Length: 130
Image 1 (cartoon, rainbow, N blue to C red):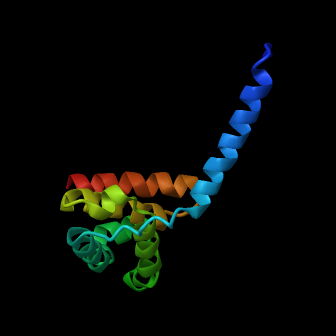
Image 2 (image 1 turned 180 degrees about the vertical axis):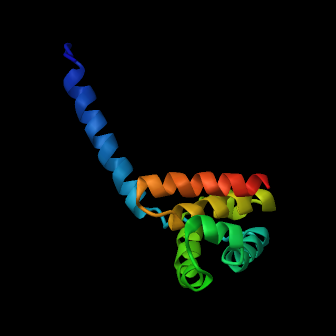
């Protein structure tokens, strides 16, 4: 894009100064408060954590035994709760939290092998229909 005119130099310097000013103001802003999870989120996260590795169909689809699942569930739940946005952390809808956490945990547990992931996903979908 090509700009012409006598005021372009003034506009460019104004834009540059404004952008520097906004950066300085942002640097002075206090860090955003951490969002506190709702009681529903905390309760649902704990319930999901305690029940996930007890689901025999799920373990079968993921080709995991309960001991291996129990060893991996803690870090997976921590990552999922850390990555949850403010909308999930503060919601009062238990089903929404449960669905998010279950999906996030499944993503953490699905193997890196694309074919095996497809098979496990299909198995989980079939198990959910029963």
